[in-house]
Length: 495
Image 1 (spheres, rainbow, N blue to C red):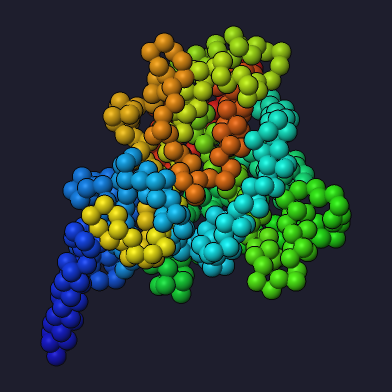
Image 2 (image 1 turned 30 degrees about the vertical axis):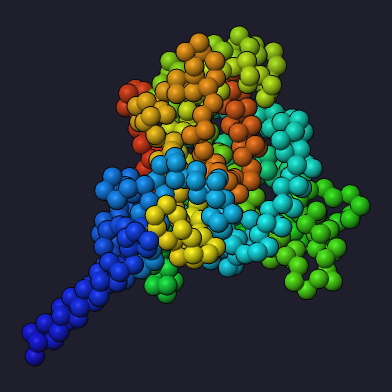
């Protein structure tokens, strides 16, 4: 009887696989869904997709299936766009059709099903985004005001680095505090001390979220959320970390409510509270408390983790290539000197430093797969039809690592952004912040911060590794939606 039962199970599995394969064949091909590997029931293409390096897996699949293909992450089909032309066509040329946020289970759960800015996917999303961008600009983003704020924060950062007295240290939380404080002044109206235990706990929250989301368990949750929602495991820790951050924002909102002066808003939270008051008679207004907390969280998290990780990864690369660090310092000394702080206006006279900053962002490709998009209706794209609601992954690494635009793309080479005569060379392939209507809201701020932080650190310190530069590993330790740099220590020697 046991043998008969086992045979029945095997038979049922085989039938399920055949039905799945037949369904897949019927759905894919010209005039239908893009081609791709045949999925297994429930598992999808889990056997072909390596969660340790998802972008690398998709690169290999693109060699077989072309620039537009389908993979099944769990039971859900995902259309992958691979290469500059198809990414640009979708995100820029046909931005309205591809602007909606795609299915991302971790983000969906955190945003309460569509609140905030980053993961929202409703009709009101554009209202909140436009409002947030307007407020950020009013408080100086992209202007001289925010530049001065960054320069002020670099003074605190330099003080912290000086305290190390040339001994080895891990820069992760120091950089996190510096970057976070810039956005904190705009969102919460104040900065925090680098030794503030509550503030440091938030830095740990954000670092853990970034690592956990891109870990094996994080990737599995993205594929099988309906199952893992009910199972114990490390994936549940991600949401505890998110809860810690949202509790902090919620507490800040309560304090702002108690001290609000509607005629003199101090920051983003005050402006949002004023907007809530203006629209209190509109029952369907998008300006409500849950949206305020989620939007404040989005700005705080997105404005901190990606930029601080980019700068940290940049320091690692400068340790790995001391000759590049030396050339940057020579340019800083020639253009800026030592008597004043670097400013954004210096960048046009510092083509090599500018090229290094761009090459850092290109090389690390912090978000290789971008955040997912979706189509708002059944969409004809190239020779295929993408059904409404299908998740789209525009692979940014396929653009940033295009070998025709960037010869030997796997090499860290600032020459990718320099012309033959040494001037800075722009490239339309440089899209680390994505492109189109979902381009990063804080792109201008992030680019300013990365340039000013790196140039100020190198103006004041020479960075030395604790091991031979050749022994430094610059390969991401985790690579899912984002690339997580390996841990390292450095010595900062005053110049």
